[in-house]
Length: 87
Image 1: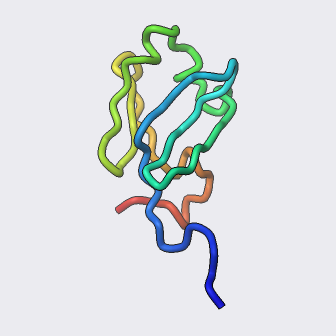
Image 2 (image 1 turned 45 degrees about the vertical axis):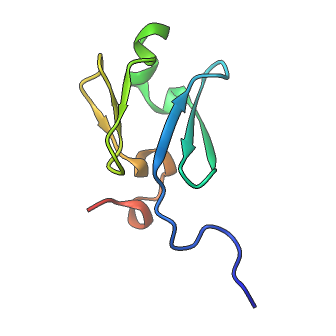
């Protein structure tokens, strides 16, 4: 029997978009799209539309925005620290 799904796949953010009002979308390298309420990230919610376009993906470590002094990790998106913590 083969196990289906995303086992032993490290989640890596490739793109971030704000296509849906009140939501932030994370496009992962493996094809998944994670959509989260922007309210889960209050410091990002405070950024205006232009400021939200100025982000940097930090390899497989996470992401940040030019006008935000916080660095976000993938486990903050996925919500399962034990399974997704980076080293």
